[in-house]
Image 1 (tube, rainbow over the protein chains, first blue to last red):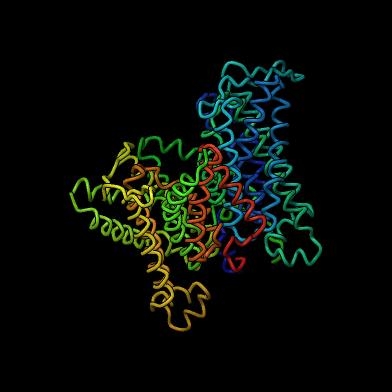
Image 2 (cartoon, helix red, strand yellow):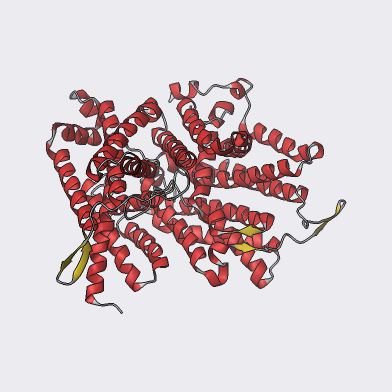
Length: 335
Length: 292
């Protein structure tokens, strides 16, 4: 272990930068930059980066902290989106409640898929079982044409209704505005990360990491594997569902391919692993790097994804454990 | 109407489909068993096999049988090159399972988009190797499908014998069981890894070239076999070569029969539900002996 840690010493570690500080500084920067840059396109990219940050962070909770290699996380994103959108379109339920209901439904379904995964140990088995669940949800959305319009997708999803904030006035989400959406996803992001932060610094986080490091040892010490694994699954599923709900009411259009395809899962994996699996800020860093990076690779036009593939391989060859571990010092359980 | 004849015909079709799953899955299980990694670029090697076959037959006019051979050999060589460049440097470093997974993900994204940009998104077709159908007791089977079945069965059988009896096969299994012990006994584990990776790619390529006349060749052709291959591997028990073959045939037959019972758009849902149930009841797969 010692040699592993020494090689991680990077810029941030020399400054004794902890991921908590990084998170605070980053959040402040994210909160103030729209004062200076109001370009709609750039804001859209930042919104997408934040959506993927929430997704990657919630996946990281399941994979990086408790060590269940779920490969069906995009299902919860899509389910959250579809539930919230359909509730708003068919039942007239306000998207503000839809966001939460979508998250709760995603959490309940992650409980359902979490149960068979409890008995599985090896990463590939869990990956396939969860992927199978995600494919079932995708095909269900695809085949229930009467409800979801199948591959035609949902369009005309209602946007968030106006809200009145004391001191600021009426905030309208109508007409393709970006700033309110940007701040809404920023709030979702900050709430998610704060809950994760306090959760992971409590006895829950300790139990998560003990299960990841040795399931047998932690079980023998009285840690309830079932409880903590399902807790991780449901928490991750909930926040992925909320992110999905936001995505639906932001883009106002959704198809099974756009939210439930395995491509989303691959993006989440790449972002988290580029940033650093099992680190607090790694997934967020990775999400910003990949989303912004893919935008700047647009200069390469159709060769963009070829370059993306090569960059991914090069990155993993030179920084196999992710950039997050290079930049920030993670608190070690034992030295 | 569900008639006995229809069921038997679907079972025969399922056997052919199962051969494809088995041959894709055996490559995946081979890699998992020896290198303990998930190869997410496996579907792309399948696709490359299809393209090599297409160019050999259509552009260069090489006879189908030689083209099959050529495609398998070229993809074998590509697998070895990719392993040397992208995976070899990662060996023996921490987080091997995850870093190898991401590396193959990158390789997969690269090849898929390379095919899309260089060879275009038009679907390409390869002519049937064999024309005509065989009629036995009123059941009709295209010679092409019989050919697929025979070649896959032959290659799988041969490969199984090779793993059991040949010197390299023994070395491979020894490395899979215990790499350190194998190294002490003079087996070059890294060389075994390289060749195993190549072989696994060659098996994927074989499945592609045999099925090329039935399914069209396109940049995305590898994604379905990849997912089906993973399901097969997990169903049969990871790392078990026999499990991959039996699992593949089982999956193919179950899928074909579920088309009769349910409508065809729900057949994959049925397959996935069966998979989850199997894993729930038998967490190490149907034929897996050991939990990894």
